[in-house]
Image (cartoon, rainbow, N blue to C red; front, side, top):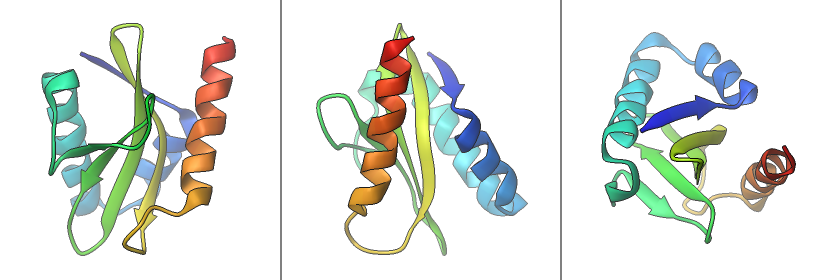
Length: 103
């Protein structure tokens, strides 16, 4: 499955250190290989259209994504700091999804 990155996700990936980036890239590769078949602990459904890619480690990374036109669009990436995903992170992903759906 083809994976597309929003420019903000690419900026996030460029900002993290190489070892963390390598873990993130392995998770993205797994997502591209498994597509809709990816499950916990690697992925979790947030809403009808949004899913989170879960990358554990010393720094927990989350990437919120959606499925679109037989591909995956990575909408928003961030370092998770609390048990629950902050509402502002979900709102950011929802806004990018709305923008994507207008295209």
